[in-house]
Length: 150
Image 1 (cartoon, rainbow, N blue to C red):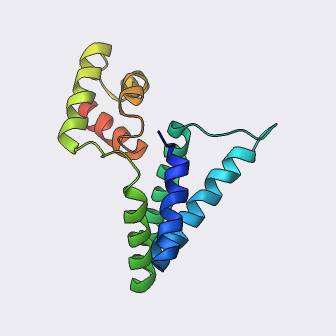
Image 2 (cartoon, rainbow, N blue to C red; image 1 turned 60 degrees about the vertical axis):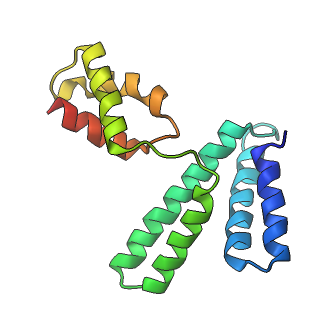
């Protein structure tokens, strides 16, 4: 079984062969981010698939934020490029939870913790975060918790 990093290398090779500039440049940048993560710290180490997914999720988030910034600045070409790169990265990420699924998980955590009001946000987040890690962005989770507690 191949690791996610090996799959990224194979897909990069295929993209280079087919001269797919968007995919090849996106995968190169992502593999560079993964390598940087591997050499950060005391000693070089190999990232697990879960850690590689976190790096890819971080890269995808950067693309979304850049696309929004470019769109606000009326730079539509750059925004479209960032969105396209985000779509390439989305192929490797797990399917994100829908708003309804997230609300169900948050409601169960609110009931379990017995929290009410804004002061209970931390307790609910502590229960929700492990369940949705990698499946929903922190901002979406926090917004859903705030909504459930208000």
